[in-house]
Length: 127
Image 1: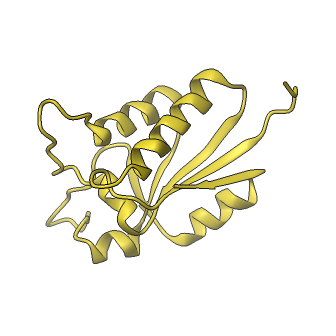
Image 2 (image 1 turned 180 degrees about the horizontal axis):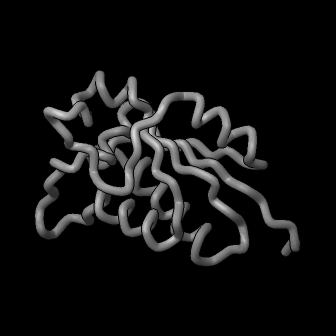
């Protein structure tokens, strides 16, 4: 095993439910943070991945609560959960003063945040 620590950016494009991509991204991020010396610079939610930030998501009692899992991960490891604001607005996930359904720990940002995160990372993984 190499002694080199790498900075990662993870891009999540799959919704919280309906595909495996978001859950796989969560598992990857959790393993990276808990079992390696590598750093996770940012997790960026884009396209349908923004549904991971919807506070109105209400999974059945016997299903894994992915939105809460992302929130716990961000809080425990101090990782930023960035959500593309344009993709979120197109899909009804908003924080506009009158309506706020953005889950805590998630932050609406522009693509400039993703560009900056990528520039600071040695690895970019897309799910």
